[in-house]
Image (cartoon, rainbow, N blue to C red; front, side, top):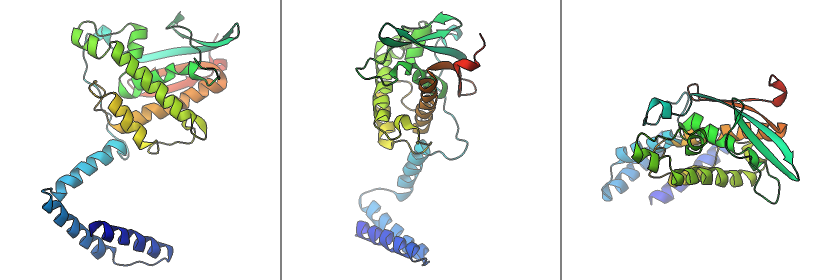
Length: 264
């Protein structure tokens, strides 16, 4: 009965909107709320608790203006933290028949030169920018910790369970899976997606993938921001065949400068 009434309200409301008619929606929704309360009581549920849980779910995904950023608890010594500011130069080069991307910080190579690891060129060689975005907006990136050698060795439990191989593999898996998802969109790589519009199922899957890790309880909107910001800069790197990316963890900004704007 409740489902039937809800359906009738939706159909009638849409019909009224299309016909530019008003109607007493207050009474209609009041009756619907009364029915919801009766059904909830029959199943031992309280409407106010249901409403509170739904409000939490909405805030987790769509927090409104100026949401409060949630930070991870700090573990380890001060010298084991992710740098508050990182400037990474991405340089694309041709080595034989391969196109590779070399990454440098302060003139020092970090990690191995990257290719697309694919039979068809798709730009994945620039994917480390996603890890920078996770560091900026989530305060989390086992991959960046490994590259910069800032694993939290002073706490063996954290070193093994949060900064170890499993966490690194999961982060790489998330980046790859989301990249493949983005490549199937039109336009590609979420070029037309704004905050609040990224696939909800994708975000929930990501949360499931990090279950049990320190980042598991961060709100979905932060994941969305990290993902979309990472792809915004990824598209610039791909278009310009490289550039410099500044990751500021205090300001939570990811800034791109093209190669032409970099002083020699």
